[in-house]
Amino acid sequence: MLSREKLEAYLEKEDIEYHLDEEDPDRILVVFQTKALSNVSLDITILNSRTVLFLSRLPLSVPPEHRAAVCEYITRVNYGVVLGGFEMNLDEGDVNYKIVGALGRENEIDREAFCRLLYLGNSMLDKYAPGILAILYGGKTAAEAYQSFMKSNN
Image: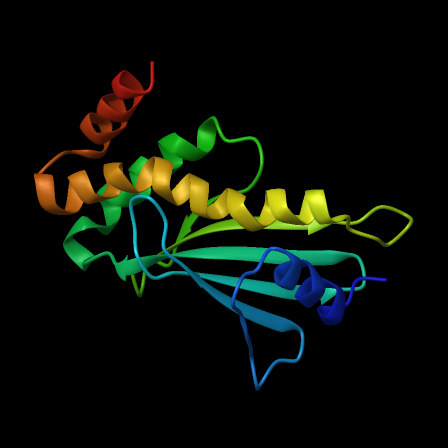
């Protein structure tokens, strides 16, 4: 069965510092420094006995005047993404990369699968955040930011 203790054990094996949410016993908080970003927070939440949510949060809020362009950009990005996806709160401007891990009949998640899910959101933020930053600070349109990303990754 999926448990906070099991997830904590995996984090400890990875030598990752984490914090427990005092209000939600099924939630673990981790802060990462990635290649491109600092203070990326990751919320790991057990939704039920077979489902865990990994939510990597971009460490800034998108100002109202840029939300439509960032929304378009992450829609373009999400079209090709296989596991998880970006989302944005249109009222607050928060951008997250969300992954839901569902367990099989054995109700177990192995360490390797946990680690893939653990690091994937940060990897995706590192990969695609430069496009968001190009919109916010470089004056790029969503299409320009996405095309620039595609050219640099071919």
